[in-house]
Image (tube, rainbow, N blue to C red; front, side, top):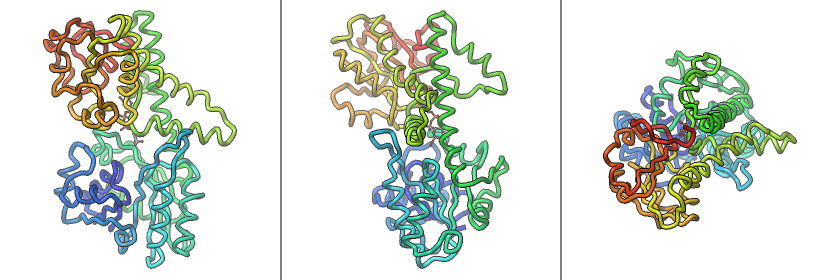
Length: 423
Ligand code: UGA
């Protein structure tokens, strides 16, 4: 099949490369010339393990364009993969979605039988009430007759996105008519997982509810962890026992500094804003966010209780990315921690295997080190903020500290006896 991918950020780059690997011809389209140049040189525009080689191996089936109108001509379907950031009030910002829909609409004027698939995370009703009207207005055609629309949410985790694409738990296909349905069925024919064919609005909601549930699961574990710490009970042992119940499951029960990244905080906030627009007050979702926002403060408070006054104390931050295996710092829990440490006058030395450059743009004044050992030199305290596997190997490096006060926001250090935020 001939596929165009509109938006070469995280979702677009991974989805396009994986569809190419499955034997499809893929045209990557983005207004950002730099991203397009990277893909032309068979390099991924974002960091994701394995993506460079996938782009390289499938180069003969990959083309690029900076124009939607030119890029989608001749393709069977196009995937909208543009970003959906948050407005100030937490609601979804549809600027990129709208401009993509307008341009695709223009291109559809001269195309027959094309299916537009929405992959971006959009709140329920967006495809029906915003995207389809814009496609119709600009194409001068009616949906289901002049073109087809489907919604196919993604469930990719940064750092393991290729594996998640090729081995999904399920594929959700939101469709309104048969041709739209057929395109997705054809594209995912080789996948043996459960496939749920449903309405577009339900597909949109499934994506939000999945992320909101996982975020709530983490906040639940964090709240239980905070209680366990007071009771001198190891929350990880507790959750090991709890997770053995198949109704609960063992995943996403790791207590710690809370969830970050470009999805959970943004998607839960968008769902809250949507609920409030319809007169609902989503107490549980708001609590999931509230617990998450308080965890970094608890970590700094714990550090202060061990180190004392933080003014002019040298504090090491190990880990800046929102999780391991990525250079992404969006909504990383290290951000509120660094902000608070700076307010309290600490002198910060930070290390992350990949994310120092990105964090430097937000906090140019703190010291960035080339290794954990360097960051730990003469430190009065250390906070572990990311679950990078290399931190599990640290032992004698901590001997460089002035005082060996190490507090984990993620349970990663292999040595026994380190105090954690919830353990
Ligand atoms: C998340 C979802 O897991 C994906 O299914 C979804 O497709 C994606 O958002 C998206 O909407 O695009 P991602 O943000 O890449 O994926 O990262 P996760 O691995 O889910 O981790 C999110 C945050 O939760 C990280 O800060 C991580 O450290 C934290 N976390 C995760 C915990 O604190 N405890 C856990 O048990 C698991």
